[in-house]
Length: 196
Image 1 (cartoon, rainbow, N blue to C red):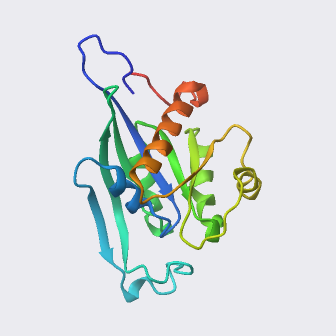
Image 2: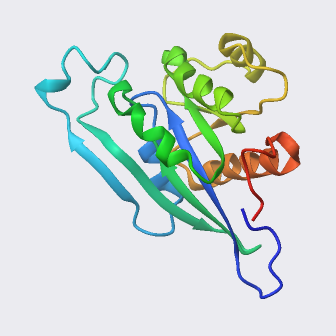
């Protein structure tokens, strides 16, 4: 991540948007991106029957098969590049490539299927990448205090948990700002992340 350029060039950062299948990653990227987001969604087919767990997302008809991509610029000349990871286990092999150069990740969680974000949390903890948990407050989903969510996910006290609406631009902006602040306040391992 480039922080200070004397030539006036913008600072840029790469952020991953991760979480379980159907949690709202594509929606989050689309809600905030200032460009038309790149989406690699395909209709769900009978090949996913018995492979993809569609409990709680019965109305879902498409699935991300590679990644989502979007961009948001802030008045401070910070430009964030957002990469949404695929949620299904059979696409996890792509996470290593997508994570190269990222300053951190947002793990999107659904209180109705909170266990679905464990794989993302495990991945980022294992790789020493800073992450925050953003709880997507779906309509009709049970609401819990952030500390209760922390306990359910076995998260340490330092990992930020924010409540959000992945459809709302201002809510998503708050999530991204929370992650950037967290990453910039020393949560990163110096051997994994470069300030370039």
